Length: 258
Image 1 (cartoon, rainbow, N blue to C red):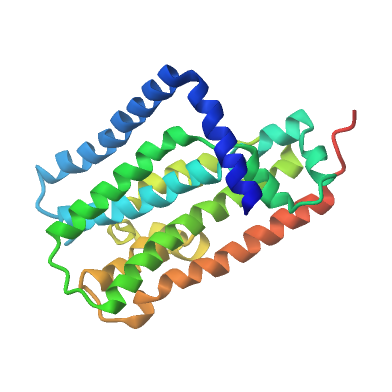
Image 2: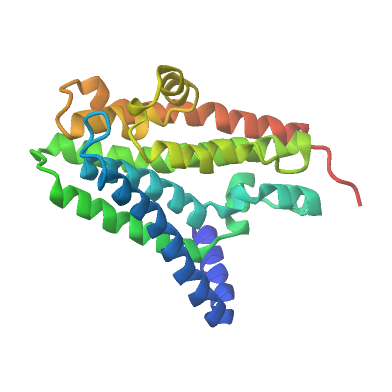
């Protein structure tokens, strides 16, 4: 981990070499993020609830999914830009180094501008929690932590899976954005408000439902099911095949030549 944190320090130092550009990008990300927030506010100015979910319940759902996505954009950017490593032939060099491949890929890139989104997601999370009448208990604290942790894991898994097919396609296909950016925008609302086909797909194929829908039902008191409470743990099972596919891709990789 020392290597990873050292790489983060170097990336931060590199980005701060152009401080004006960094500040402008940082501020622009704040404006982009709050545009998503204001869309939800505008929606609830016309409707009191969406299928029984109030404004602050939706904002809690929104904050958790945005937190997980922003965390990965900040700390796992190397996975998201993996196709660049393949196209430029830089992945060959990673194979020659005596460190884990995935760790090296994570060290390859970082985007500290996205820290603005991470901070904003935490602010909105606090706003939502303050305005919700939650009957707090140790279990509910654990559920909240599991929701946030699983939000990180699910996007990390999707990024790893997206990186894996670059071993076969070389280029990073835009279809991955359907499940990353598209999934993020869909899952920022409770999945249960959508039709059953969408609900089942984003529960059992890409398990957004186990991140911030089923545990959300328990957290806000709409369900007493302990299965719902601990459903974020199931995201770990989703991560396993993602890592296996990535490792299989490494074995298949035959170099870009020289």
